[in-house]
Structure formats: structure tokens, C-alpha cells
Image (cartoon, rainbow, N blue to C red):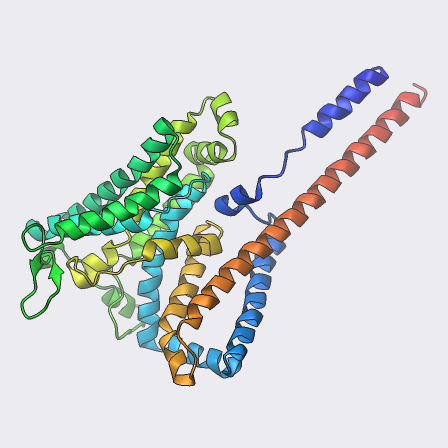
Amino acid sequence: MGKGGAAKGEAAAVDDVPEPVPAWKAVLQGLGPRGLALKIGAPVLALLISLLITMALLRSTGADPVSSIQSMIDYGTTENSIVDIVNRATRYYLSAVAVAIGFRMALLNIGVDGQYRLAAMLSASLGGALTLPAPFGQMLVIVAAMLVGGLWAAIAGVLKVTRGVSEVLSTIMLNAIATGLIAYLLNDKRLAEVRPGSNNVATPQIPSDGRVGPLNGFLSAFGLDLPGRVYGLLPVAIIVGIVFWVVINHTRFGFDLKVSGLSPTAAQASGVSARRMIVITMVASGAVAGLIGMPELLGASYEYSLNFPAGLGFTGITVALLGRNHPVGIALAALLFAFLDQTSDVLQEVDVPKEIVGVMQGVVVLTVVIVYELVRRWEIRLQQRTVAVELATGHDLAREGAGSPS
């Protein structure tokens, strides 16, 4: 091969080195350290840094950071608090998985909050109007919630692929529309009724055959006698996480989804319809979003009212980012956020405003995202240096082989 051919060969080899993924896509898709040591070390380092920053913030308020954190730990490890933390984490986990499905394709589904609230309200109305034997009553409510959430999210997907409307804008607007629609339907003349002796408006209560009992009886068989009611749909959240991990990492659909998010042009060239993947991803994200309100609806309140938990969709965004869109990481992040929310009230006993917890959560998320991004860039540089050394070494060996006698 001549010099020109060798130069072309070297240029082709250099071109084969993959370009770094843009930082915003890496954050959304959960791309991070690949080595096991870095995967464990990066979050530990980030949490240690965030703990130091949090202690500095507590000190700035005039409180003793050590005693404040100790009070939170003492309160959060009581049996009653453990039950509340697990229940909160169940809802946070489902919300984060719904967001993570979109993140895996670099889609920002900001509308999870509206999707799960509208799904909970309509499915609660359906469950309260029909009386079916178990488990058909529970299945009807759950399937209805997933359908409503998926169809509501599909609107944003269709707008994006047909009119080029950003899913960020459309889902935010759909949140507002869902809020207005719920306010219109949650009326004593439509799908709700006023509770006697109060100003609370709620849908008809779901009958006993359509409810899901707590897991306390099952847990007591293993020696875990907890005083509160653990959501009976906790196993559903675990199954959702397992299915999410299997589909994303071990199926053709998950591969096509990630490729479409990284490069729609490359996906189109390989025969994958990026437009179809956008719609499917939004529908799947909305369907999981429909499950967010089910643990509370079928396991505690049995109705949708003005007191139904709100804002879980936005919490899911931060939990998904903190967990790097991995089911295990999301679970740990959900437990951490649930712990911080549960123990926020105890801070007032040590003269610390409970709002400091929101600051702590923001510090944790920002620290983890920044540390992961720095570690990811460092690892990319190491890979590029390794490739450059291998190319240079291979070129030298080729020249030595060409110059040696046969």
C-alpha cells in the first residue's frame, strides 16, 4: 500500500472512533461511568460532597449540622416512619420510571404530573361506579389508568412527529389542560360528590372488592410487624422496574429506542422509524405514569379528592436524574427523597426551617449530575488516549513488518 493509501487507512481508523455523546443527551439517557469501580465510586463521592455542602448550609442557618442530621436519622428509622418512607418511595419510583422511559430516548416528558392525576381521577370514577368481584375490579381501575395516561401522553408524541412541536412545551400545556379538566369534572354535578360535613369534593368510593389490601400480613410472615399500612401495590412497582430494565437493555425495542434518541438519522438509515419510536415511547411513559396514583387510590384513599397527592410527576424528574435512569439507582434515589421528605418536620424541633430539605434535595441532584458528567468526560478522554496509543503502536508495528526481510 502506498503512502496515500496508508494515510487514508489511518484517517478511516481515526474516523471509526465514536464521537462523544452530547452532555445533555448523556444526562437524560443515564450514560455514565462504565467501569464497576467508577459506577460505585462516582455516586458515593457525589453523596459525600453533597453531605458536606448540606452541613455547610445547616451551619449557615445557625443550627448544629451533626445534631440536625442525627435527629433526621433517628426519626426516619422509627417503624412508623419506615412505612411512610416506603409508601412515598413507591410513588416516587413509579413517577421516576415514567420519566426515565422518555429520558432513554432524550425526550423530556414534563407532563407526567398531569397524566397521573387525570388517570387517577377518571379511573377512580370508573372504579366507584362499577362493582366487580376481585381481582377484576382492581384490574379494571389499573388498566383504565394506564390507558388514560398513555393516551394523554400520546397527544404530545403525535404533535411532535406531525407538527414538530417540542414535547417540553406540549406536555407543560397538557399539564395545565389536565388541571382544568380535573377541576371541571371534579364537581358534585358531574363525576364527584360533596362529602357530608366538609367542603371536600371526591369521586364515589371504590367498593371493598375493588381495593388492594396492605402487605402487612405478607411481611409479618417474615417477622416484619410494621404498625402502618404498606401499599399493597408495592410489588407492582418492583415488577415495573424489572420490566423496564429488561426491555431497555435486553430487547430489540430497547436498542431501537436508545439509538433513535442518540441519532434519529442513524436510526432511520438502519430501518428504524424514529417518528414511530417517539410516539411509542411517549405512550409507554404515559402508561407508567397512570400507575403513579394507584397505590394511594386502591390502597389508602379509595377515592380521588382535593386532597389527592399532587406534584409527584415533578419529583419523578429529579429522582430519575439522581438515579441515572437505572431501576436500582432510581429505587435508591426514591428512598433518599422519601426519607428527606418524611424527616423534614423534625428539623423544626431543632430550630431549622423544614424548607431546607428542598435545598438539600437540589444540592444532591446537582452534585450527582455534575460528578457523573465529570467522571464520564474523564473516562471518554482515557478511552480516546487508549485508542490513539493503539493506533500509533499498530502503525509502528506495520512499518517494522514492511521493512523486515521476508
